[in-house]
Image (cartoon, rainbow, N blue to C red):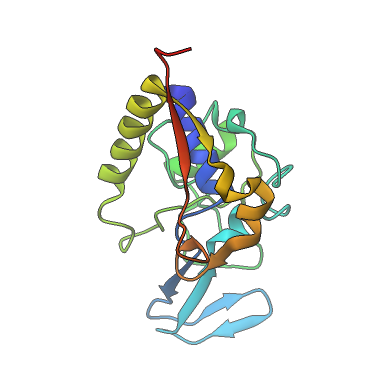
Length: 184
């Protein structure tokens, strides 16, 4: 189960379900690099870019579940240090920062597939448990492969569409073939 959780986290890093979230600045103006943002302004936070940036991850284009080996299983926010250029508003001593350091990652690493802070996803605990339970049951019973009609991995990547959530263009969805493990 520990490795399955690492695979789930790495999957959510490489292809986050929610690709863009909105965060609102607090009661004070925020200095972000050379920019001074007024209080109460909403900022679009591009999770896909943060989760796949080589400024945040070593070898970001590679799928490496082992990068999560030393991160606590329950940690779904990694690296709560201020990003480069942000001077205030982040908790430097958080448990997530400790998790990022334990994983040997740089302190500015961001991983927050369910958002972060007081407005983070209210259903994230259920979502994490549900994904692990469904995958364990499915993968324990079936060998899963991409349906030939999908055209392979490259065709899937060509159909990716970023709205608020990551989706595939067209009405086909994601078709898979399930082979029972008890049959040859």
